[in-house]
Image 1 (cartoon, rainbow, N blue to C red):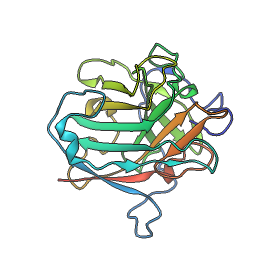
Image 2: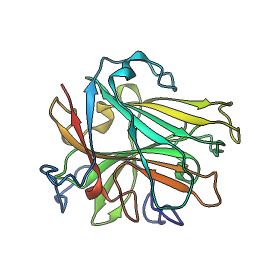
Image 3: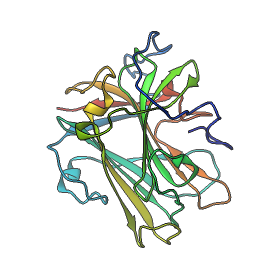
Image 4: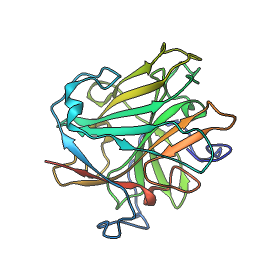
Length: 254
C-alpha cells in the first residue's frame, strides 16, 4: 500500500496468476544486527498448532505480548491498534486488533483491492539477500489478499499464489467487537486472526524459521472512518508500505 492519496500507483500491484521463479539480484541494504536500535524488534514465541476463533480467545495467545502499531502522521483517528505473533512447526499465527467505530468494508471476494477499505496488512521479508517478500491483507469481513512481491529498486508487482489449496491455504477468521460483523455496522473494534503456512511461502529463503532465526517484517492498518483515511505502522516507513529496508525485525524464540 502507498500512502497518501492513491494508496497504490497503477503499476504497484498487478494481480497476475503465476509464481516467481527467483530473484537474481541482492537487496541493496541488509541488517546484520540492530545495534543502533533504529528498527523495532519483536520476539516470536513457539506454540503448538491451534484453531482460530477470530477474537484471539484461544489460550495459546497468552504466550504472546501485544505490540502497538503507531499512527502515521499527526492527523487522523486515535484508534488503538496492536498485533501479536506466534509460530509453530507448520506456520505463523498473527492476531491483529483495532479500535473502531464503523466497519467500512463492502468487498465480498478474495484477491480484490482490499486496501481501499478497512484493512489489516502483514508483510514478511524472510531473507535480506533477496528483494522479495510476502504481503497479506485481510478485511473485517474476512476476505483476504495474499500476494508475493518482487521489489527491484522500487519497481514492484504482486503475484497471486498458484495451486492455492491444501497445506498451502491460509486459515483466517475475523470478529467484530461491540456490534455485528457486517458492512456499515457500528462497533467498538475488530480483530483478525490469521495462520500463514510455511508451505505457502515456498520457495522464499529462510523458510521455515528455526529458533534464533531473524526475519524482517512490518504490520499496517488503514481505517476509513474519517474524512481522509488513517494509517498505522509498526516499523515507520515514509511514502510507501513497500519500503522493505525499513521493516522491523522478528526474532524467533525457542
